[in-house]
Length: 66
Image (tube, rainbow, N blue to C red; front, side, top):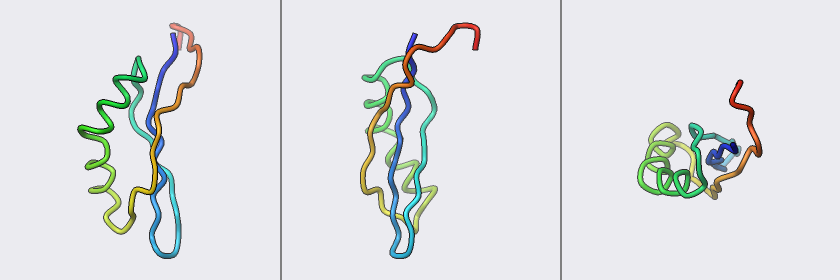
């Protein structure tokens, strides 16, 4: 089973940072949740930064034992 997470690039005038989302079972779930909830959540948590870009990334095969 693979897992997916959204990675955000946020920048302010003097610095840039990254933030991540919770894990999702599919890319589609990741994209949907990020568009509906995630972008506003990240913007609210980092009001001095602007979301420059984001993408859902796969962490490949993950064991069920983890």
